[in-house]
Amino acid sequence: MKRLLAVLWGIILSATLIGFLSTVEMHAETGEPQYAHPEALASTDWLQTHLMDDDIRIVDCTVSFINPDSYNKGHIPGAVSLDVIRQLSDPNGRVPLLILPESQFEKAMGNLGIGNDTKVVVYDAFGGSWAAKLWWALMYYGHDNVKILNGGLGKWKAEGRKIETEASLPTPTIFKAKTQASLIADIEDVKQAIEQENIYLVSALNADHHFGKKPFSPNLAPPGHIPTAINIPGPSNVKENGLFLSSVELKEHWSKLKATPQDKVITYCGAGYYGAFDLFALYQLGYKQISLYDGSWIEWKSDKTRPIATE
Image (tube, rainbow, N blue to C red; front, side):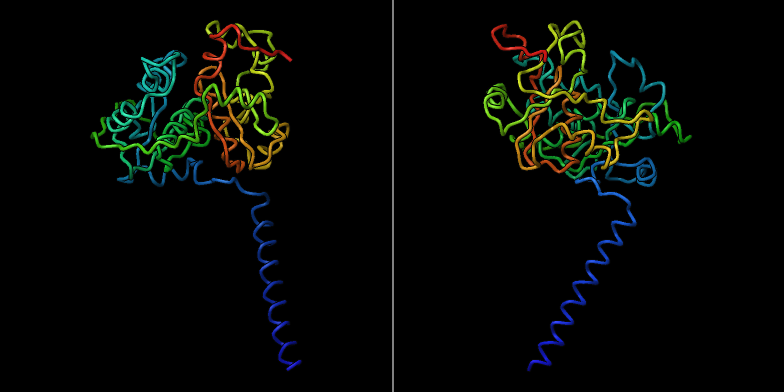
């Protein structure tokens, strides 16, 4: 009996050792830990391979006031155009630039040819810092099969890949939302975060605005930040070459955030665009309770009795 037990124990130890060694080999091969959601970041190689798939919709997230007529000057083949500011904003919102209400968002997605089974890839010319608003909006309305193109239009062009100037006209379809309320924060959530140490705020606007030196834009004056918020500007999640930070770089970049992946974290910016990109970074870092304060600085500073910090 003792001999049998010894043999069985040896088998168990061997299996455990083999499993350990295979894990070490896997990590040695990759060289670094992976994103929590690598499927949400599409490479240009991946997109090239899937460009003609029947179930894919590529969305050029044009920002017309920054890059006018950019879509008509050249876009990824098959991409449809969406001005993420003009076409995603609720014209009747309590403050400007809030996300479209559910029914209007359903209509907008349906008109783009995005249904519930559509695989969506979003991109812009800024590494994803504006396209992230559509990524978040789709996630918020229950469509998680959405990817941000790593490097965006800049990387696609730099690699000499095909560009079109003719507009793509999608066949309208039906999109039905399943709102995920946990992905959006309102002003009461923000007030709670100020008061509670285990809820964290992140400002995604630039440092000059955050520390009260200069507003990000005239419409966002006065500069400053919501008390207790730390500053991680949305565009800082991208390298100089336009690529999203690697998993190791991202972890280091966000080390100033003292939250654990189980803590609540709320991001914001001027109107929820850079804030959505910070949210994407947190999503890739594996944070579980993250939300976007869509009203952001526009709403916060609209009431002069609300506190503004500059340090």
